[in-house]
Length: 306
Image 1 (cartoon, rainbow, N blue to C red):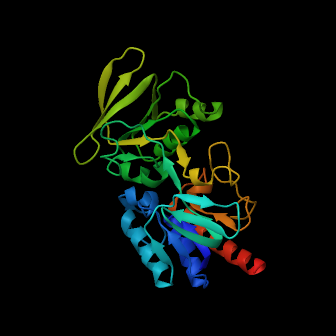
Image 2: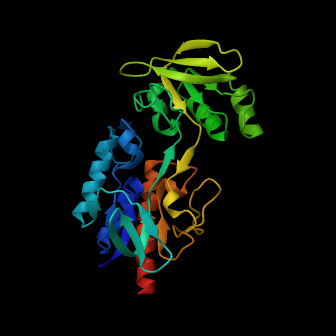
């Protein structure tokens, strides 16, 4: 049996696409991945998703979205996609030894934050360690924070956090930023931002939540500890597009390039939603919105081509 729509990925984009496709009568097959739910599964409390005035846990939000998609007939398999063949139609998707064919595909594999890989970072993720100031900055009112990075993203994160924090320490391993001149100037001149040059984090400290960091000056090798409430890692994101390398048009980082005002990729019948094609916003609500658009685009494409 050839599926109308196969959705690869199960974050807010994938599950919203599943909901819209199911309600539209396309009975989508969702290949969730073994780590279903996307980045929100690593988030403690979500307070900025509309409709939940008291907030809710990230995993709870994803479970609700999952159940809603299933209610209308979406079929969800918690398996990883191992290979995709987009060279012949209908398209073929493999999950190990099993294969599925599809008239159309919605890619919602998301993007992964790049991490420092230091002790304490993974253990305290969601408990003071974050990669999203827009998501978590609100929780750190009148507290001191650290942002790690030297590009435009780090500058943006640091500047955003000044809205809430009493002080933001911007830690960079070199003696000059990679960021654009205007963004670097704004950060350096901001009264709430303290730049710590030539320094790397070596460990995030704390039992139940972040309480301090251990840092090392790369020129002097001097090691110091700083009490801190939160660590925001802003060294970039990597879109999860390895499966589609060479088959779909991407930018130099790997984000899928879409047609203007559409979720269509460079290949007919293949659509993308969420962070896999969004290097700018990276929010659950914007991902969900593109998931709805992708399902509508896929359904219209199927109707036009059948």
